[in-house]
Length: 200
Image 1 (cartoon, helix red, strand yellow):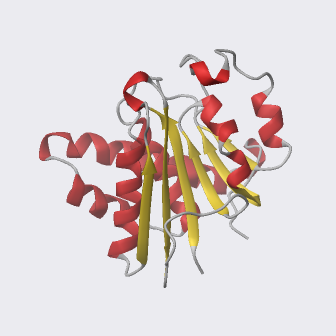
Image 2 (tube, rainbow, N blue to C red; image 1 turned 120 degrees about the vertical axis):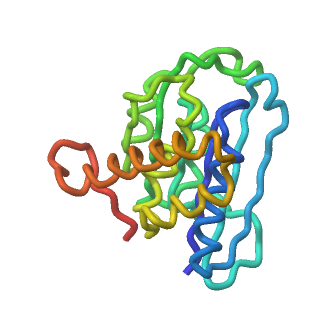
Protein backbone atom coordinates (compact mmCIF):
# COMPACT_ATOMS: atom_id res chain seq x y z
CA UNK A 1 0.00 0.00 0.00
CA UNK A 2 1.26 3.49 -0.90
CA UNK A 3 1.10 6.29 1.64
CA UNK A 4 0.80 9.85 0.36
CA UNK A 5 1.78 12.94 2.35
CA UNK A 6 1.65 16.63 1.48
CA UNK A 7 3.62 19.21 3.46
CA UNK A 8 2.30 22.69 2.67
CA UNK A 9 3.51 26.07 3.83
CA UNK A 10 5.14 29.27 2.61
CA UNK A 11 8.71 30.23 1.86
CA UNK A 12 11.06 30.01 4.82
CA UNK A 13 9.06 27.51 6.88
CA UNK A 14 11.13 24.48 5.89
CA UNK A 15 8.56 22.43 3.99
CA UNK A 16 11.20 20.98 1.67
CA UNK A 17 13.45 19.98 4.56
CA UNK A 18 10.48 18.39 6.34
CA UNK A 19 9.81 16.33 3.22
CA UNK A 20 13.44 15.22 3.16
CA UNK A 21 13.23 14.02 6.77
CA UNK A 22 10.00 12.15 6.14
CA UNK A 23 11.38 10.62 2.95
CA UNK A 24 14.52 9.50 4.77
CA UNK A 25 12.40 7.86 7.45
CA UNK A 26 10.55 5.86 4.81
CA UNK A 27 13.67 4.95 2.84
CA UNK A 28 15.62 3.70 5.85
CA UNK A 29 12.76 1.31 6.71
CA UNK A 30 13.12 -0.32 3.29
CA UNK A 31 10.35 1.47 1.43
CA UNK A 32 10.43 2.91 -2.06
CA UNK A 33 10.18 6.72 -1.90
CA UNK A 34 9.29 9.53 -4.30
CA UNK A 35 9.61 13.19 -3.28
CA UNK A 36 8.51 16.18 -5.35
CA UNK A 37 8.40 19.87 -4.57
CA UNK A 38 6.95 23.10 -5.93
CA UNK A 39 8.39 26.28 -4.52
CA UNK A 40 7.80 29.04 -7.10
CA UNK A 41 7.90 32.42 -5.37
CA UNK A 42 8.97 30.99 -2.02
CA UNK A 43 11.48 33.76 -1.34
CA UNK A 44 8.58 36.22 -1.26
CA UNK A 45 6.49 34.15 1.12
CA UNK A 46 4.78 32.27 -1.69
CA UNK A 47 3.22 28.84 -1.48
CA UNK A 48 5.60 25.89 -1.08
CA UNK A 49 4.37 22.31 -1.25
CA UNK A 50 6.25 19.01 -0.97
CA UNK A 51 4.74 15.62 -1.73
CA UNK A 52 6.21 12.45 -0.24
CA UNK A 53 4.98 9.07 -1.50
CA UNK A 54 6.25 5.80 -0.09
CA UNK A 55 5.41 2.12 -0.21
CA UNK A 56 6.63 -1.21 -1.56
CA UNK A 57 6.53 0.10 -5.14
CA UNK A 58 6.02 3.76 -6.05
CA UNK A 59 6.14 4.80 -9.70
CA UNK A 60 4.50 8.23 -10.03
CA UNK A 61 5.89 11.20 -8.07
CA UNK A 62 2.58 12.97 -7.47
CA UNK A 63 -0.63 11.98 -5.72
CA UNK A 64 -3.90 13.25 -7.11
CA UNK A 65 -6.74 15.05 -5.34
CA UNK A 66 -8.49 12.68 -2.94
CA UNK A 67 -5.46 10.38 -2.55
CA UNK A 68 -3.46 11.97 0.29
CA UNK A 69 -3.40 10.25 3.69
CA UNK A 70 -1.83 13.05 5.73
CA UNK A 71 -1.55 16.79 5.08
CA UNK A 72 0.95 18.65 7.24
CA UNK A 73 -0.04 22.31 7.01
CA UNK A 74 2.37 24.92 8.36
CA UNK A 75 0.15 27.88 7.55
CA UNK A 76 -3.58 28.57 7.64
CA UNK A 77 -4.30 29.45 4.03
CA UNK A 78 -2.12 26.60 2.77
CA UNK A 79 -4.14 24.21 4.92
CA UNK A 80 -7.27 25.20 3.06
CA UNK A 81 -5.57 25.36 -0.33
CA UNK A 82 -4.46 21.71 -0.25
CA UNK A 83 -7.27 20.16 1.79
CA UNK A 84 -8.95 18.80 -1.34
CA UNK A 85 -5.99 16.45 -1.83
CA UNK A 86 -6.89 14.55 1.34
CA UNK A 87 -8.84 11.33 1.34
CA UNK A 88 -12.28 11.69 2.89
CA UNK A 89 -10.94 10.20 6.14
CA UNK A 90 -7.54 11.85 5.76
CA UNK A 91 -5.61 13.37 8.65
CA UNK A 92 -4.58 16.99 8.82
CA UNK A 93 -1.85 17.95 11.29
CA UNK A 94 -2.17 21.71 11.18
CA UNK A 95 -0.47 24.70 12.66
CA UNK A 96 -3.02 27.41 11.95
CA UNK A 97 -1.90 31.01 12.18
CA UNK A 98 -2.99 33.92 10.00
CA UNK A 99 -0.07 36.24 10.80
CA UNK A 100 1.48 35.33 7.47
CA UNK A 101 -0.56 37.38 5.00
CA UNK A 102 -2.31 35.94 1.99
CA UNK A 103 -0.44 36.14 -1.29
CA UNK A 104 -1.38 38.58 -4.03
CA UNK A 105 -3.00 35.79 -6.03
CA UNK A 106 -5.46 35.31 -3.17
CA UNK A 107 -6.46 38.96 -3.21
CA UNK A 108 -4.68 39.59 0.07
CA UNK A 109 -7.72 38.47 2.06
CA UNK A 110 -7.99 35.32 4.16
CA UNK A 111 -11.09 33.18 3.72
CA UNK A 112 -13.37 33.16 6.74
CA UNK A 113 -14.06 30.15 8.96
CA UNK A 114 -11.16 28.05 7.66
CA UNK A 115 -11.33 25.71 10.64
CA UNK A 116 -15.04 25.10 10.17
CA UNK A 117 -14.49 24.24 6.52
CA UNK A 118 -11.70 21.80 7.38
CA UNK A 119 -13.44 20.10 10.29
CA UNK A 120 -16.57 19.35 8.29
CA UNK A 121 -14.71 16.74 6.26
CA UNK A 122 -11.33 15.87 7.79
CA UNK A 123 -9.74 14.75 11.04
CA UNK A 124 -7.79 17.77 12.28
CA UNK A 125 -5.12 18.31 14.95
CA UNK A 126 -3.99 21.80 15.85
CA UNK A 127 -0.52 22.57 17.19
CA UNK A 128 -0.85 26.13 18.38
CA UNK A 129 1.53 26.34 21.30
CA UNK A 130 4.51 26.69 18.95
CA UNK A 131 5.69 30.27 18.25
CA UNK A 132 5.09 31.24 14.62
CA UNK A 133 8.75 31.90 13.86
CA UNK A 134 10.13 28.87 15.69
CA UNK A 135 12.70 27.43 13.29
CA UNK A 136 11.88 23.88 14.42
CA UNK A 137 8.14 24.11 13.64
CA UNK A 138 8.53 21.89 10.58
CA UNK A 139 10.39 19.18 12.49
CA UNK A 140 7.84 19.20 15.32
CA UNK A 141 5.02 18.69 12.87
CA UNK A 142 6.83 15.82 11.16
CA UNK A 143 7.19 14.30 14.63
CA UNK A 144 3.44 14.62 15.21
CA UNK A 145 2.63 13.03 11.86
CA UNK A 146 5.21 10.22 12.09
CA UNK A 147 3.13 8.05 14.41
CA UNK A 148 0.08 8.40 12.18
CA UNK A 149 2.17 7.06 9.32
CA UNK A 150 3.50 4.05 11.22
CA UNK A 151 7.01 5.30 11.98
CA UNK A 152 8.75 5.09 15.35
CA UNK A 153 10.56 7.75 17.34
CA UNK A 154 13.79 5.95 16.54
CA UNK A 155 13.08 6.23 12.79
CA UNK A 156 12.78 9.99 13.15
CA UNK A 157 15.92 10.42 15.23
CA UNK A 158 17.94 8.35 12.79
CA UNK A 159 16.64 10.41 9.84
CA UNK A 160 17.62 13.62 11.61
CA UNK A 161 21.10 12.28 12.32
CA UNK A 162 21.55 11.67 8.60
CA UNK A 163 20.36 15.11 7.48
CA UNK A 164 21.02 17.71 10.17
CA UNK A 165 24.31 19.46 10.88
CA UNK A 166 25.82 18.64 14.27
CA UNK A 167 25.29 22.16 15.62
CA UNK A 168 21.51 21.93 15.12
CA UNK A 169 20.97 18.23 15.75
CA UNK A 170 20.05 18.26 19.44
CA UNK A 171 17.56 21.09 18.95
CA UNK A 172 15.87 19.26 16.09
CA UNK A 173 15.78 15.98 18.01
CA UNK A 174 14.05 17.78 20.88
CA UNK A 175 11.53 19.31 18.47
CA UNK A 176 10.78 15.95 16.83
CA UNK A 177 10.21 14.29 20.20
CA UNK A 178 7.90 17.11 21.28
CA UNK A 179 5.87 16.53 18.14
CA UNK A 180 5.81 12.80 18.86
CA UNK A 181 4.58 13.49 22.40
CA UNK A 182 1.74 15.52 20.92
CA UNK A 183 0.80 12.48 18.81
CA UNK A 184 0.98 10.17 21.83
CA UNK A 185 -1.20 12.49 23.88
CA UNK A 186 -3.96 12.28 21.29
CA UNK A 187 -3.90 8.51 21.73
CA UNK A 188 -3.92 8.46 25.53
CA UNK A 189 -6.54 11.16 26.12
CA UNK A 190 -8.80 11.23 23.06
CA UNK A 191 -11.64 12.88 24.97
CA UNK A 192 -9.53 16.04 25.23
CA UNK A 193 -9.10 16.33 21.48
CA UNK A 194 -11.43 16.88 18.59
CA UNK A 195 -10.23 13.71 16.86
CA UNK A 196 -8.21 10.56 17.47
CA UNK A 197 -5.46 9.79 15.01
CA UNK A 198 -6.55 7.07 12.61
CA UNK A 199 -5.40 5.83 9.24
CA UNK A 200 -8.25 3.42 8.50
